[in-house]
Image 1 (spheres, rainbow, N blue to C red):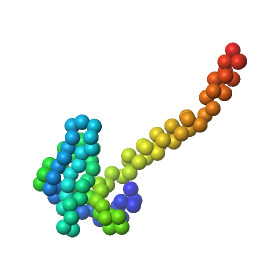
Image 2: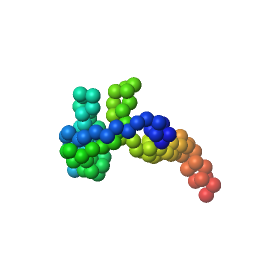
Image 3: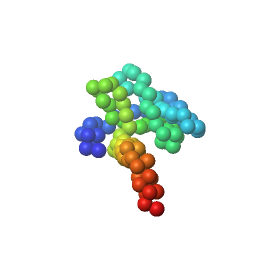
Image 4: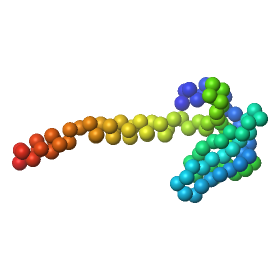
Length: 104
């Protein structure tokens, strides 16, 4: 989270809310520098920000987008899951099974 801590948080007012109860993506819209930005959020998180409330976001001026700092928690879990899946997929299962079945 060190990268996120070096940038300034901007508090913005929610102008539109689009929370979905199904598996679809939920979002809120904010106005910043005379431009409307679309911020994707999980449904539970989206429900916390009705129209008129404020949300703290980080602005990335290099790529012109706003995002909610989350400490990169989701990315760590995705990397862990992907690594475990990759490791399990490269194990030569056919050889291991045939080796163990020959021993018996």
